[in-house]
Image: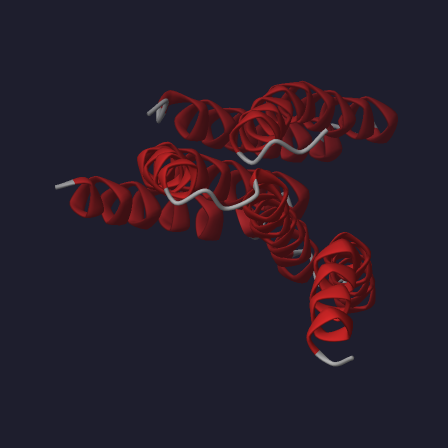
Length: 65
Length: 128
């Protein structure tokens, strides 16, 4: 079981939230939005790989083609 | 005792998700998706041995493999549809979740048609 992914996503989430607040309070709204979007994309990449792995497993196990 | 591991991981993930949800709701959703994936993967590897046992048993009993593989396919489709629907419900999109469930039901119905046809043929043979 790869529990590290959960911690990675949690760390990225907290980091992005802090970055968003700091950038927003310093008046750089567009950079704050970019930081939020970047965090979302990074996490989405990891999650999509895992979902693909799950679908492959289910497909081979239940002979779904 | 894998259930203890699963519950521990779920509790940690829930705490992380609740903390992050205040600031970034979309990342909290990703955490819940990943947790669901991990638990699903653990459980599905356990199920592999059961499926193998069923397959060898039907091989010994001379049952047509088409039927048993159709049943396995239906179970797989049901699990995947349930997973997708739960993710959509977590994100608050109940209408898309119910559409996924509808699609799963229709696909299962399509897969079940050959078994139904075989049953009908059998009935037609018995009743002259």
